[in-house]
Length: 353
Image (cartoon, rainbow, N blue to C red; front, side, top):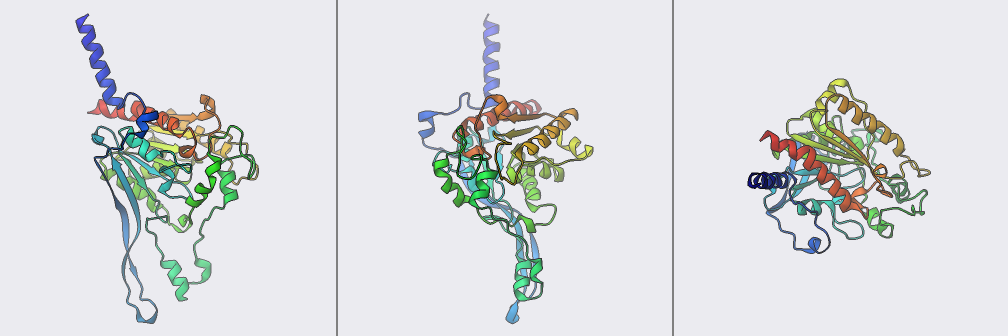
């Protein structure tokens, strides 16, 4: 009996080591002071570009372009878990992951409270990250025709309502919708001009995400919407330090068998919300996106990989919008992701130590 008791105790200790905090913080626990070991910011990547002389004899020179801004928060003992890198979608910034439009805790703080180091990145061409403005300046200087100006994506309120699936038509919300519609105006303020259309291939954000994982000596990459496949694209550039890939609501690309074989070495989670085919007039067909990702997950599994599809309605979780991390049940969804990380990424990491 004594040996059995010791074995059980050791099993509990090992399980706690792998999974971190045994119970997700709720209620008053979420109101406790947030304790950090460190926080800060830095840039990843970037290239030096020689600029031509400007008008009026202004000298040319060198400039850094395509660098990616990253801010981070690390909890005490944060080295016990892999860092989670969160990258936003189209027409947004890393504000996506911060305080929700209606003032609730965002995923960046919540993951820290679940003992995870969190790194938020602004895509190249957005917010605090850099981009190459030389074409715009050349058009203004008259050395390049206006037809060469890059397109700027700018989503309006109507497009956001339908693409983000807040309701069947603009101004009408789904009765079971999880997004806090009363605060939708705060989400509209988060939507900013997007210069991704002028980026060359490969997108510098993909390269920078892979480099960030190397800098962190191993990381889990999470993408949403436009950046949903960025973890995979980063892994196809350099998979060496990417320990897990989380893709939230995105069309999955058609890949070669060799590319699938590369990605199959990294645990993958794909998550989709509700009402995928219930919106009229929206430019995005989310039901088709789900179908492409279901095929992707099956191909990864067939190649021997660890891949999981979480289609929330099939799990009994109803009403979620495209903005899962801002929905009313966002912390419950975060717990699903943390549990998946512990079982599929952290557990593997522990066995390799």
